[in-house]
Every structure is written in C-alpha cells, then in structure tokens.
Amino acid sequence: AQERTLSIIKPDAVAKNVIGEIESRFEKAGLRIVAMKMLHLSNEKAEGFYAEHKERPFFKDLVGFMTSGPVVVQILEGDNAITANRDLMGATNPKEAEAGTIRADFANSIDANAVHGSDSPESAAREIGYFFADDEICPRG
Ligand code: CMP
Image 1 (cartoon, rainbow, N blue to C red):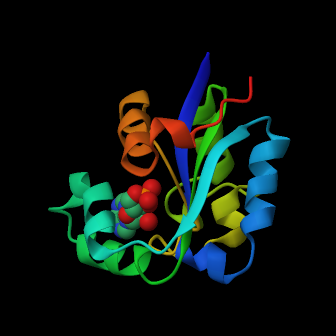
Image 2 (cartoon, rainbow, N blue to C red):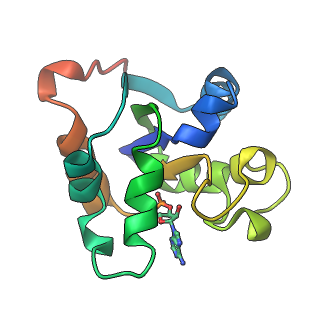
C-alpha cells in the first residue's frame, strides 16, 4: 500500500555532509520526497517529538544531540514506505546494522545514528503532523 513516513537526517549526518547521499538512497529505493525542510530544533521541539521516550535514561542525551546542529526533516512516500525506510536505515544501534544500510555506512553510535524513521502508521501520522502543515506537503503521484 502507498504510505507516508517521517524521516529525519540527524545532526551527525548533516555535519558529515552526506545529506545528498542519504536522500539518494531513498530515491533509488523508489521513495519520493513529498515535503522537506532544514531546521535547527529547539529543546521544546525535540522534547515534544521524542515525548514517548521522556522517562528513558537516554532522553536528555537524545534531546541534547538532536539540538546540537541542524537536521533535515522530510516526508517519504511510496509502497510500504514505513518498512522500506526502516530497511534502508538498518538497526537503531549502528553496531547491529546490516552492511549497506544507512546506519552501517554513516552512523557512529546509538545516539549519533544518522537518521530517524517512523516505526508505525500511527507514529508516522503523528510525526508528519508534528513537522508539516497540509499545505507544505506536495503529493507527486
Ligand atoms: P530514533 O529512531 O531517533 O528514536 C529514539 C532515539 O533514541 C534512537 O533513534 C536513538 O538514536 C536514541 N537512543 C539512545 N539510546 C537508545 C536506546 N538504548 N534504545 C533506543 N534508542 C536509543
């Protein structure tokens, strides 16, 4: 089924200057970018995005990392986009990520893990709405 998912290129990957290489992997896999913006997250914006992890021991480091530099936020659209994006990203911990995945190739640690992708249709809907208004999304068929 056609789906949309929210993807974030995190500060470590932006700093490595591999935005284009990562976008290229999405495009080569048949995912279409239907919205995108670059922004430097405030503490409030990052905390709200990761609200479900609020009680986790890594929450403070996660927010600190995600606000440490600019990120690129985008909506990817395509067949089974949520799973397709997660397959391209690889495991959350880059040490466990399969060869050839984005995290295996570009990430350094579980915090600086290059990319985020929605993990379910419910989180995709919430995360897309968290960053994009309807008139910022450009369906491309
Ligand atoms: P992300 O997909 O952006 O969602 C939450 C992030 O928390 C995750 O990627 C990791 O970068 C980070 N994180 C740090 N420690 C952990 C952990 N022990 N388990 C899961 N996520 C973690």
